[in-house]
Image (tube, rainbow, N blue to C red; front, side, top):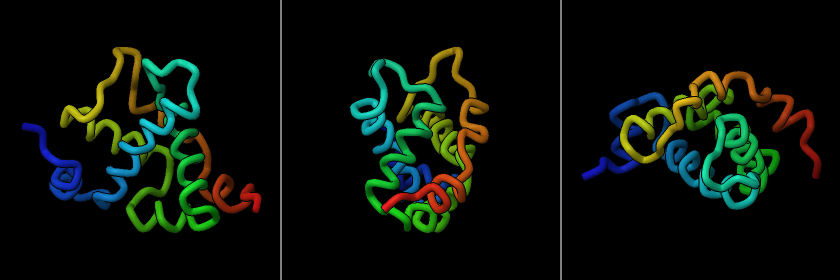
Length: 117
């Protein structure tokens, strides 16, 4: 039996369980709303989907919510994804890498400076 997302987050200790749940939810959102190829979502595409979902849910407060959960940069999304891969909640292609999540965008620029009401 798979561990729950909450248990995975608590055992890992780096991210709030809500952060792990958000990234998992964001994969479904991205597959439906962002990508044209629903069979596979790359790290960069997932980061874009997570950005859109965060802005949709929290608007200008998105960066505060994410930061409060321990997510401060796109690399954190990758760390959460690979934590879920390790625990069989997600899967990766052989061409996927955690580096796909490195510096996809800057949180301050994306969630504050470029925010439009």
